[in-house]
Image 1 (cartoon, rainbow, N blue to C red):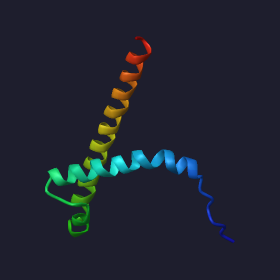
Image 2: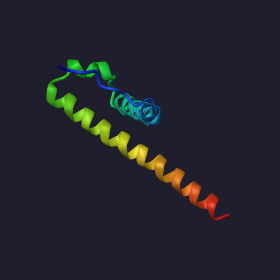
Image 3: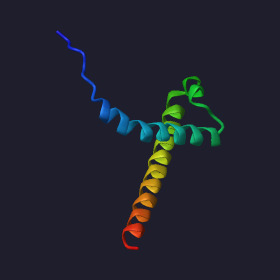
Length: 80
């Protein structure tokens, strides 16, 4: 028998800001390429997959950039 998965609300709250930001970066990337997320279902599968792969890499790099800057700022603040 399948039991419902119990969600951890504190974990969801911690992940939500980053996942929302990641989705925004993906949307931004697609927009720069002239697409919206909904457009991908109209494209050939390979093209849609390529765009999503590129968008995901872009979003990951942007998140890493933000995390690095936050870490740098903390380090600077700690050493003042």
